Length: 47
Image 1 (cartoon, rainbow, N blue to C red):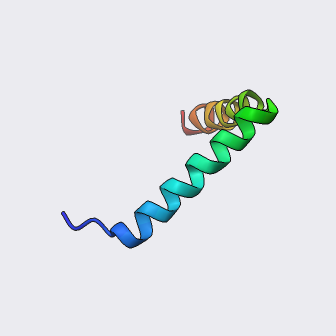
Image 2: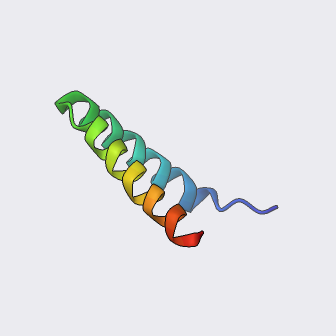
Image 3: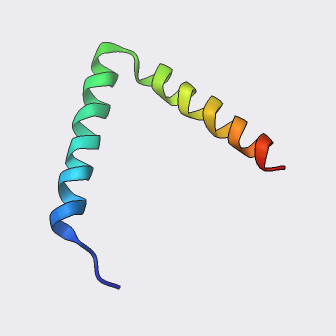
């Protein structure tokens, strides 16, 4: 298994910074709820 660290680390760092920013301004829960709604719709469509 070959992990592309030069691609993975910047993506993880970007995700972490965005999560911290959204959490500080209080809309992280809103983003998580949006992901839940879209994932639920995809699961229903696949049935």
